[in-house]
Length: 151
Image: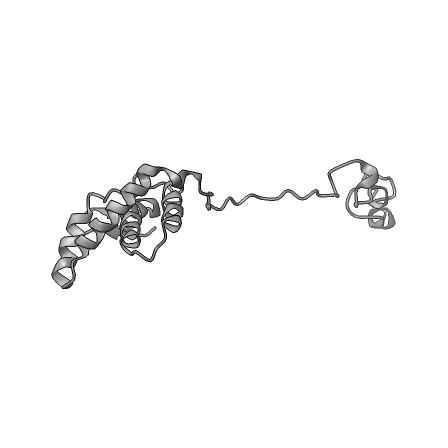
């Protein structure tokens, strides 16, 4: 478990909570760049929605405090860049073209392998039940139990 402390003293313990803060910032910054195509931004919006960010075009409530702290360290205006990007994102969000883009969330499924030792009809099983022991009950000792006189 890792804990991240925000500027206002709140703490985050899950990645999902962190995404609610970071993803809108990244999207707004990408949207402010005119070289990023609308198709790419639509896919980014789709990815944000698919990964649980409900309103990626809207800033998180902790963002103004973060920007105020960054403004002290940086001479460039980050807030104007993000505002320009958010206008573009809002227009793309309202158009709704992002909804038709493919989902890129990975679905990890376990493939089921047929275990031929136990599954299927007996004549197709790879385990030879008849040779487990002399009496054919399959005690697991092979013919060794009979050889030693245990049975």
